[in-house]
Length: 325
Image (cartoon, rainbow, N blue to C red; front, side, top):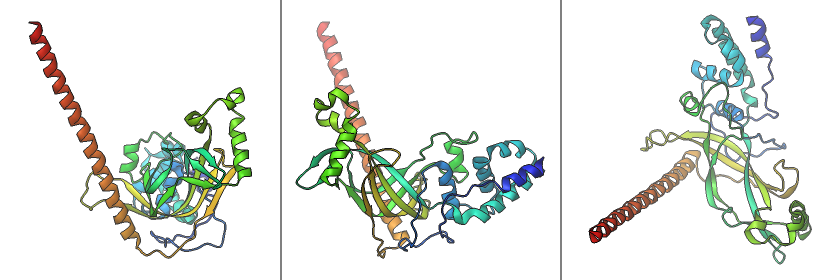
């Protein structure tokens, strides 16, 4: 039974549907490609393979291999983990499987960001992004898996401790700003009719923000992740997050979640980077720390303001009580 299960496991197809070349832990950020790349969904299972693809994990580390098997082959894990002799065979099979298939693990991802469109400008032929949903000079994005359920009884803390963080911060080498989308009047009209068709008799009465909220769209950032970094040893011990350096390859906008109705597409031309991956990481990491410090300062000011208000209220209550006496 064990041999049959191990053999079955060895031939389980875990291959993601495209091939990327990334023999080293760090890939050149700006190399071109002569094929049409496919972009994987941001599922946790694909994150796991990304960590292997960019050498965040080691085949020599039994815990890394065991956790990979637990994530991808939970039933086999539960059947044999408490039998050290049987599990040793399974582990070696898993190690061989990773080594064999690691070159097919994904490093390209489709990052989907829901947003809303507001008004169409007929003079400029652009559709504006609804206020509060624009992307303004942003170079860092928190990337979380689309599937919320974690596999095989694992939790976020365990996975981070075992080398498999559930989320990471994606860093782009240049800041991204998206406040509007070029769009022909014909396409804009079709989009407006498409979204208005769900409103029925209310279509002529809904205005402003209520109307914009019906114009939901999905921004697709097609990226290639080429390096993983941690902030360990940079003087901020509390920052145990994983950072992923990525090259933006394509921007698309869709009218539907299934991404079948395309409204906009733009190929991002690769150019020679004038900074190393380490320099980009350090620059973005410093920016992130400044933002965190500013947020902490604002929280502290709010707490102090609330404390002062409480003190004033308490003094007022005491004065009122004394006056009544």
